[in-house]
Image (cartoon, rainbow, N blue to C red; front, side, top):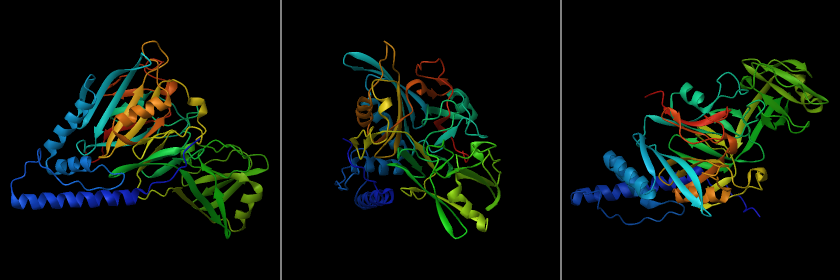
Length: 419
């Protein structure tokens, strides 16, 4: 039975972190006034905040005062955590770890990238589509990485194999490309941290004095009664309307065309597709407004990438496969995952499987591994044949298809525009 879900309030947690940081800085300033500071051996009184690791907070604060110390701590942390692994420096604050672990006496080959974003200030973690022109596209991870000048790339969320359309919430640079399915878990990427929650769409069309719920954005239709919105990212035309349905072409917030056939999606608008019984009411005045939000609201979120199920939640192993309708991906398989630590290090993992030299992992094994890597939050990404990791110019794991299958999207570590 799945554990009951509860949403953690990102803003409250960040407020708690700030309070701890301010307390620690105050201690440092006081100590500096009284005696010389030797950060490497200074002892600071423990401050207890539920769900927050103050030990890592101290490292974080010391690192901001002394960046070289943070680099040293990052290096020592990774090397002590994986003493038998092969560790390569990719860039400042970015390490690639190769290792083999054994489960039931059989080998599992793992590639892991750990990133301290406080050190790697000129890099950004961001989802990337295979094409800027349309969601209906698939390319290899090497192509996606090179097109985005990425140092590191890992396959991203689930997608429809026939078309390449991502299945689940995907936001890039505050633009929501696709909406959630089955209330699945997603990771929100903020300017100064991360959060994980099961995401729902909260969107509506308002017009002619009426408000009509929007069931999804740029996703395949599941029910004929659903109201869907298709933006220019979907492609040139919307799908045909469902039986007894209609598509409304909206340009500059005005309905300019209605048809049951595929409708051209205007560059300055979108197409609403759904039952005539609901949508014809909007034609009274033809002026409409689309509002899009998510639950949780996640104010200030820059990017969202979905996956599922949870692997680690609030620092504990948590796998809610049934609740997210992911039973088909059970068993032992190649796996991909993303997580973050208490001091906002990012962990990206690719696990090879389905071969004698690497048998893959179960979701529970992957969850335990992500916790052992220090994650306080982690989610499973698309796996199986999609699992592929790219580091510094080449694919570093051994996917079933050489170089990896063509993908819809990836999560990448790339140079920021300002760098």
